[in-house]
Length: 291
Image (tube, rainbow, N blue to C red; front, side, top):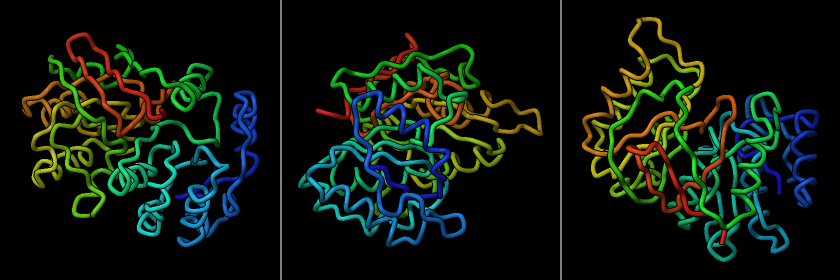
């Protein structure tokens, strides 16, 4: 089922995504409120939660794909029927603001999901490789492997080493905004995935510093850095230097350069699944979110 737990989308932006799903042999079912709009939200909170709950309650529905991110997932997650999620687990895919929903599903049902593009598809940003990555993450039980690319802005951020643990995280704004809520996971022994878009470097620094001071990064096993897209640097600090300053002294492996996030060629990875980050070899490997 296609749902919009956060920001609104429009039918014309969904055409390409629906075409892709059909080419994969999937039958898309639109949530009743998938195209709703109330300002910057995809309808009211109750309606957005109702679509997610309907998807988990219907045994014919085998996957829950978010149309886009935006804003609003934190407003509806407390109304998600976790008992229904636990009764009939299904794969959920989305990213950006959907990090809040993925955190809630992990907290309430230990449900692994997929950090990947929304169905409102953009071929320019997410070309054929991105489409195949999402298809594989949704429909294959094979592990997902993502290699660091020298062309990514975070490629220069690396602390060598090898670590294993559940891959948790996603968008930095949503991770930071989850501190103090029931959904913030205990990251002890976990590999933290972090990506961001359109934030100045000082705000990224502030969010990472907040996570450090709150103790959220205590006991981490490792860090996997995705794309930091259109993140401005008006002070000449340098993205890699700032990230190394905030993450390089944690005493754990840190691997940057992963094409995961809001940037060109975004790839999909399971979150909540067991992963290995090899910062020496430059590879992140994650077990499947589907079984």
